[in-house]
Image (cartoon, rainbow, N blue to C red; front, side, top):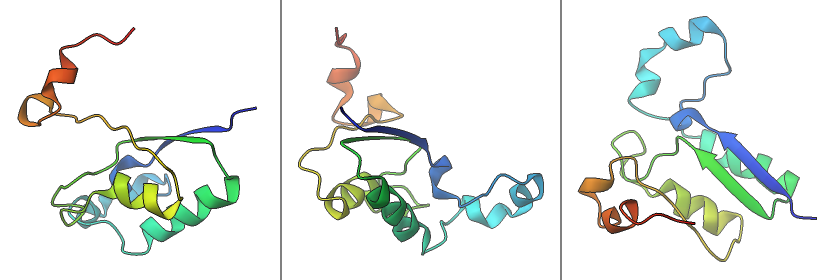
Length: 102
């Protein structure tokens, strides 16, 4: 059986879900430094075959221009990575945005 994990990490802002945590506006500008390791440790415990992360940063100011999907791929010792860019017309992957996947 394939173990699939779908997880919305909310741009790694580290918000536990309380309404007042959204008032901590500085988290929009930078993720807590220990959050990546917590996420990786959590995913390692689950031992997934496929991980689908929603709202993950790739090369943004908030992630200090790091490729977070690639970092997670290496830490989980996965052999492949597929990603989608939010703004496809400013990326080299824009050709795939126009091609339907069946």
